[in-house]
Image (cartoon, rainbow, N blue to C red):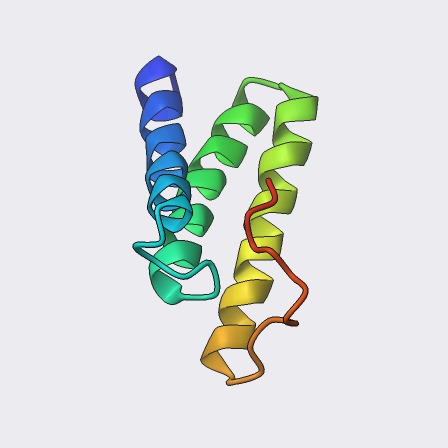
Length: 88
């Protein structure tokens, strides 16, 4: 897919991470989790197409964990209080 897609996906994730680190958004919020799902999903697809297996593992797990976090938020379960939400 190319460098533009990689940079765009990375910027989406980094923007959410930066805002969380500045305290502008909560890591247990949809505003944090959705960009992580989108960015890591895009990067996972790109890694698959480019056969970059280590990068695919990283981004696929990041997307799966973010989806699990979003499901927890949407169902009202929330994330465990010890979870940082910034892994990945």
